[in-house]
Image (cartoon, rainbow, N blue to C red; front, side, top):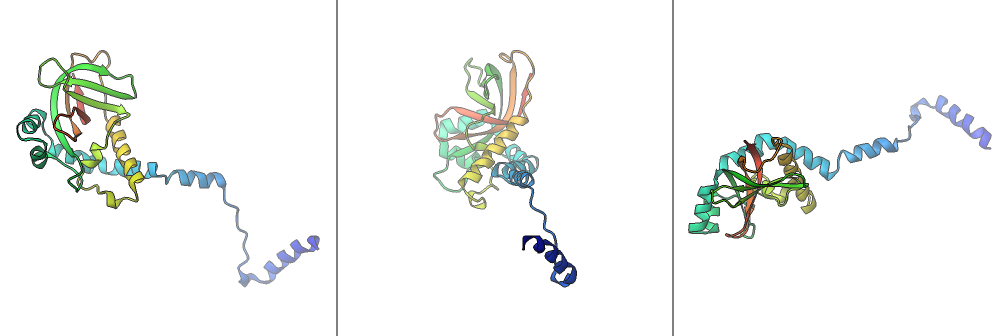
Length: 215
């Protein structure tokens, strides 16, 4: 019976063209794996972050950036909430911390560029002590870049995991935009623009630069 089945099947297809007999090719597992890899959360959020970086993210930072000295004075004299209301950016909800876009310049007191969490410690008020940490990455703490963007709302994304991957993708772009001169950076002047999160009035400033020049 097995020997007769294949010829009969071929004959049936030949005699019944209207039945729509066709040969279906088995899917290629490797192709399916490649296609799936291209639609992971990381890939989609990385592509989205790249699309909005130059046209939306950088303009928001530049538009809202205030001199760090001015921002510090506002926080010191009036408190965090008035400073946030005047200069800050944050997602909806009073429980969310304030994010600030700021510009500044200062002398590099310490440079740790060998670590994956590379950073520069900068003195911006000329007292000889570092008062701002510039996070260079590639490992960058926090979600200030994402949370400072008024057009990025959590409810527009699938879940917290996807939203977190967007924050990581934006931090990755900030890291990719940084170039440093060769040699010892201590004693050089760093000019920067970027964002940071401030949860309490006395917290240390850990800024993610979107623009950095060292000379």
